[in-house]
Image 1 (tube, rainbow, N blue to C red):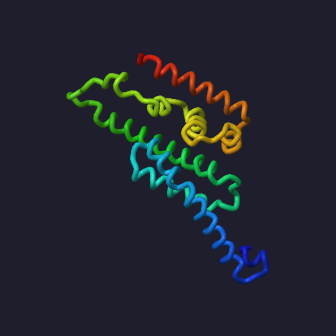
Image 2 (cartoon, rainbow, N blue to C red):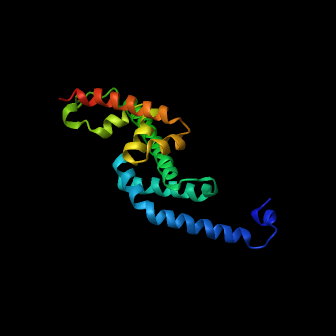
Image 3 (spheres, rainbow, N blue to C red):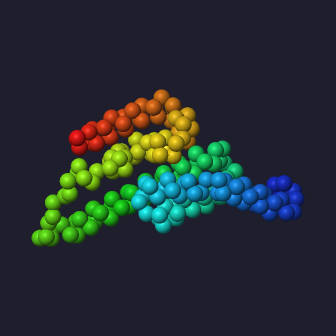
Length: 176
């Protein structure tokens, strides 16, 4: 049944859609710029970042009735979109390396001390740790909000953050 049939009125669905559009517009006006900037820092590409942030807002528009905390929800959805992007890039790189693997013009990898960044250390984390780090440290969401968004306990999120810091310390610690 449609919203009009359920509420027994004509025009109720149109009014609800306008209400959702206004609510999403308000959230957009407040959070889009920061979300797009956060995403750009993660992916290193402003155009792609805007595409991902826009996609997150489209999903928010579609699912708005089920969203309790739009800001946290947007950062979680965007983190997942970024993770999907990184996975795709990883698959593309593997395919490229397989194709180009027989080349004779091999050049050694650059020195890690000059190229490794915190972003790279975060990218090396397993997905379960990476998302927690992105939401807590990069999106500045409190542990309780991250736990709620990821449907984990606060203790699990704290442990994941601890594990992530330990792994990143090992990765970055070798550069002294």
